[in-house]
Image (cartoon, rainbow, N blue to C red; front, top):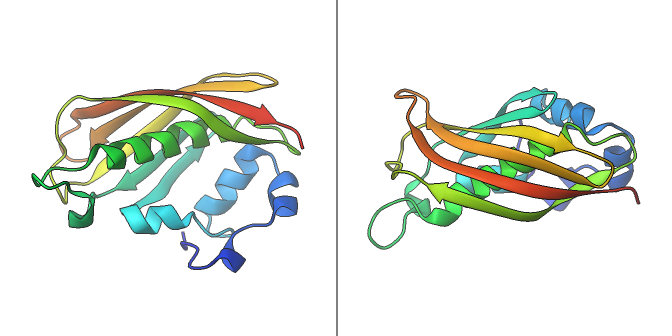
Length: 158
């Protein structure tokens, strides 16, 4: 999956609206549409897309650490926001878009810098105007739970 390096590489609004959310996310996974620049910045990429579930895989880089040397909570939050909201996106119909209204995370244990994780988002509900999803961050090698989250997204038709 190529990561967008400049604004011209991002899909246009017309391109986004021409597909269902599931088609859009699958296009990113196949590399037909550039992935989000934030993925390159924070060290994660789209790994899997299914109807109602999205998985990002990542490794927290040293640059994501805080002054005491642990992974900053914002890294957990960004990955969980991404996987949960994109899980809702897989349920968005053609001609609509979404955005996060609110999200909450709980960090269960610290992720060591450089450890590979999966951020798994699963849709719980997707209606005409709202979507709800849950997420979890798990270690790829150890399978341990490192963080959980939940989100509410608004679904809009321009």
